[in-house]
Image 1: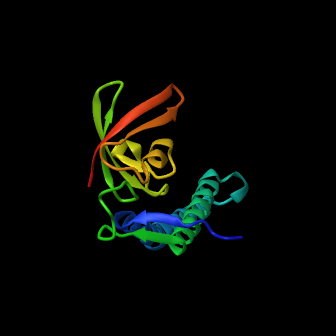
Image 2: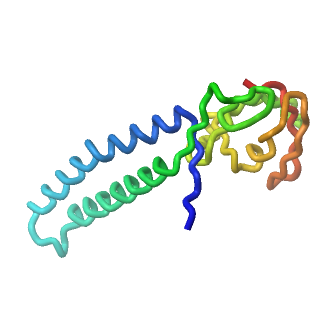
Length: 157
């Protein structure tokens, strides 16, 4: 089975590496301490602190495996290699929501980095996918639950 490539900006790669490092060096030790303390409470059959600590340990280990797999399959989109005449991963796109006459700006990122509240839009989202390959001045239609939304691309950087 072929692994799915994980598209990341340089910032996204750095964030994942930092999270992995934190989980391996600090969080593992914290959880291990919680388990030791909980073992001191005695009877494991009715020890909720122990069960909670073991569950947390399982979540941390699962996240570590997930991050390692993402990093192993990462494809970094370099800022220098980008063509600012079209929208691609790593581009900042200034849009006009035609219906509401409202300007919005999004950075197009891989799905692992997506955070719409921070202006980071996945290349796999309906709007992100519709923007890829387009250029300044183009108008696009994006299908949303509320219907078709039209955007005009005002700028790419």
